[in-house]
Image 1: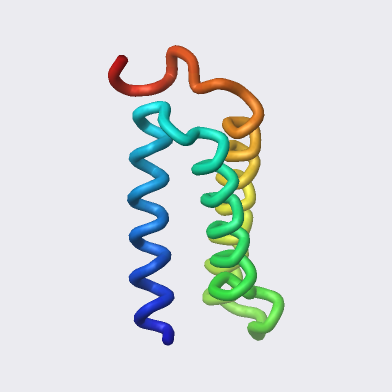
Image 2: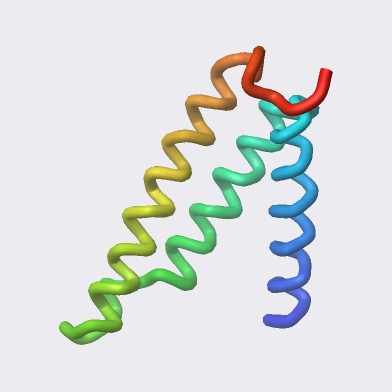
Length: 88
Protein backbone atom coordinates (compact mmCIF):
# COMPACT_ATOMS: atom_id res chain seq x y z
CA UNK A 1 0.00 0.00 0.00
CA UNK A 2 2.74 2.59 0.73
CA UNK A 3 4.32 2.20 -2.71
CA UNK A 4 0.89 2.53 -4.36
CA UNK A 5 0.14 5.65 -2.30
CA UNK A 6 3.48 7.17 -3.21
CA UNK A 7 2.94 6.45 -6.91
CA UNK A 8 -0.61 7.82 -6.82
CA UNK A 9 0.51 10.99 -5.04
CA UNK A 10 3.31 11.54 -7.57
CA UNK A 11 0.90 11.16 -10.51
CA UNK A 12 -1.65 13.50 -8.88
CA UNK A 13 0.97 16.16 -8.15
CA UNK A 14 2.52 16.01 -11.62
CA UNK A 15 -0.82 15.97 -13.46
CA UNK A 16 -2.53 18.74 -11.51
CA UNK A 17 0.69 20.77 -11.30
CA UNK A 18 0.88 20.76 -15.10
CA UNK A 19 -2.82 21.64 -15.33
CA UNK A 20 -2.22 24.64 -13.06
CA UNK A 21 0.78 25.74 -15.11
CA UNK A 22 -1.26 25.74 -18.31
CA UNK A 23 -4.37 27.28 -16.77
CA UNK A 24 -6.59 24.20 -17.12
CA UNK A 25 -8.69 22.74 -14.28
CA UNK A 26 -7.35 25.48 -12.01
CA UNK A 27 -10.04 25.37 -9.35
CA UNK A 28 -10.28 21.57 -9.24
CA UNK A 29 -6.52 21.11 -9.46
CA UNK A 30 -5.74 23.53 -6.68
CA UNK A 31 -8.32 21.94 -4.36
CA UNK A 32 -6.96 18.44 -5.11
CA UNK A 33 -3.42 19.67 -4.42
CA UNK A 34 -4.57 21.32 -1.16
CA UNK A 35 -6.01 17.98 -0.02
CA UNK A 36 -2.84 16.14 -1.10
CA UNK A 37 -0.62 18.64 0.73
CA UNK A 38 -2.77 18.39 3.87
CA UNK A 39 -2.43 14.60 3.80
CA UNK A 40 1.32 14.91 3.35
CA UNK A 41 1.52 17.40 6.22
CA UNK A 42 -0.39 15.28 8.70
CA UNK A 43 0.97 11.85 7.77
CA UNK A 44 4.58 12.57 6.84
CA UNK A 45 5.59 15.80 8.58
CA UNK A 46 4.12 14.95 12.00
CA UNK A 47 6.66 16.83 14.08
CA UNK A 48 4.39 16.67 17.14
CA UNK A 49 5.08 12.91 17.45
CA UNK A 50 8.86 13.36 17.54
CA UNK A 51 11.22 14.05 20.37
CA UNK A 52 12.99 17.41 20.49
CA UNK A 53 15.92 17.61 18.14
CA UNK A 54 17.15 18.40 14.66
CA UNK A 55 14.79 15.99 12.91
CA UNK A 56 11.76 17.49 14.68
CA UNK A 57 12.80 21.02 13.66
CA UNK A 58 13.27 19.84 10.08
CA UNK A 59 9.77 18.33 10.01
CA UNK A 60 8.33 21.52 11.56
CA UNK A 61 10.02 23.56 8.83
CA UNK A 62 8.48 21.31 6.13
CA UNK A 63 5.08 21.52 7.84
CA UNK A 64 5.17 25.33 7.85
CA UNK A 65 6.43 25.43 4.24
CA UNK A 66 3.57 23.21 3.15
CA UNK A 67 1.11 25.41 5.04
CA UNK A 68 2.33 28.34 2.93
CA UNK A 69 1.87 26.25 -0.21
CA UNK A 70 -1.68 25.44 0.90
CA UNK A 71 -2.39 29.16 1.36
CA UNK A 72 -1.16 29.90 -2.16
CA UNK A 73 -3.23 27.08 -3.64
CA UNK A 74 -6.35 28.32 -1.85
CA UNK A 75 -5.79 31.81 -3.26
CA UNK A 76 -5.29 30.33 -6.72
CA UNK A 77 -8.52 28.35 -6.41
CA UNK A 78 -10.41 31.56 -5.63
CA UNK A 79 -9.15 33.59 -8.61
CA UNK A 80 -8.80 32.94 -12.31
CA UNK A 81 -5.22 32.21 -13.42
CA UNK A 82 -5.36 35.13 -15.85
CA UNK A 83 -2.00 36.30 -17.13
CA UNK A 84 -0.01 33.99 -14.86
CA UNK A 85 -0.60 30.79 -16.83
CA UNK A 86 1.79 29.38 -19.42
CA UNK A 87 0.72 29.25 -23.03
CA UNK A 88 -2.36 30.84 -24.55
